[in-house]
Image (tube, rainbow, N blue to C red; front, side, top):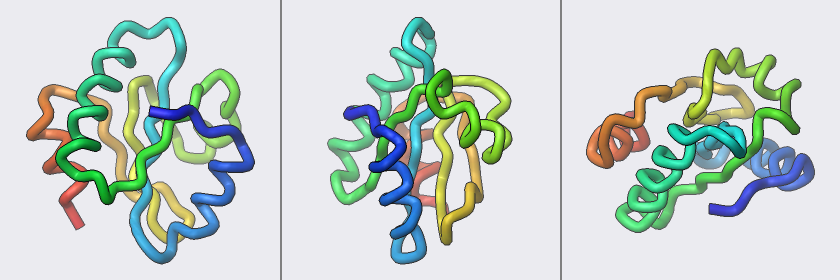
Length: 103
């Protein structure tokens, strides 16, 4: 999963009215984040049409504050330029697939 810089993030957010996008919020030294990223890699293989990007909360603190991120790892669902849902518990691949399939 590629980490997005601010330009890529803003570009994706600008287009979020056409389809849902997902932003994986993590930090570099977070072991739980690394496990969650492995789960997301599998989810992306199951659902390749999904737009899932990754940001480091240390470099995107303003977005984390705007989206009210309480902890990492976090998967944020973006629709119409707004954070509409968040997933903190990456318990299993099926749970994450269910989260991204929820309208």
